[in-house]
Every structure is written in structure tokens, then in C-alpha cells.
Amino acid sequence: MSKYAVVLMTPARKFIEKQTPPQQKSILKAIYKTPDEGGIKGITSQSNKYRLRSIILAHGL
Image (cartoon, rainbow, N blue to C red):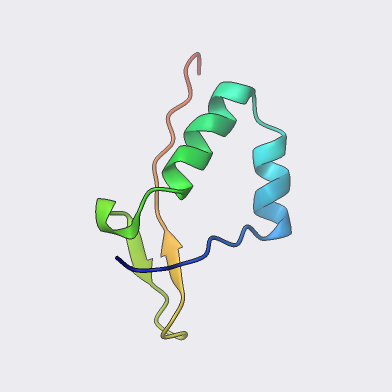
């Protein structure tokens, strides 16, 4: 099992805090998935860092 840490930069944290509780839950659930579940891409300029790519659907738009 790989060990990793999730670090939310300030703009990301503030964005999440402004969302409704159901949206926050959806976002955080996607962020904290294990890397084996997909959506994780390596950052080419930094060998030991990765980014999460996720699609978040909002209801009522």
C-alpha cells in the first residue's frame, strides 16, 4: 500500500469551504480516494507530486 499525504492549498481549501455541505462531501470524497481508484496524474516537473483530476456534478444548475 502506498503512503501519501493530501495537501490542500489555501485557494482550494477556501473554495471547498464556500460550497454547500453536500458539495463539500462530494469534493472531499473525490480528493481522499486512494490513488489506485483513478484520476491521479503525476506532475511532470515534480517526480514525487501528483494531482487529482475529478469531475464534480452539481444538481440544480
